[in-house]
Length: 78
Image (cartoon, rainbow, N blue to C red; front, side, top):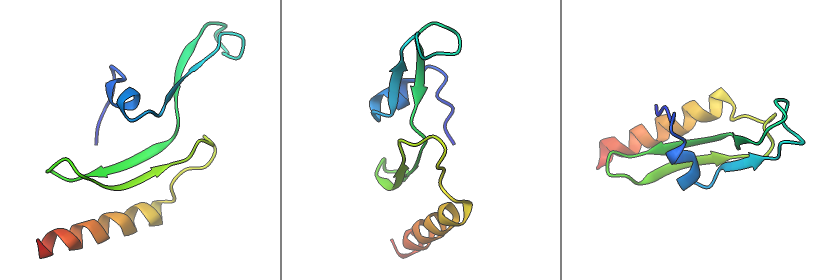
């Protein structure tokens, strides 16, 4: 799990966008993100990614678990 308080990762992954002040509930520009899930190996390789520009659509927990199990199973063979 990654906590990206400084927004460095979301900017590097290209999943951040600036919400104009006119559209912001606060009336000022805000940085927003696209919902995304990445599973990254200890070697730094992205083994799984899910990105959806619609913030109302999230990765289903069963799909997350399936991907994690698949990746963990592949790791046993290495």
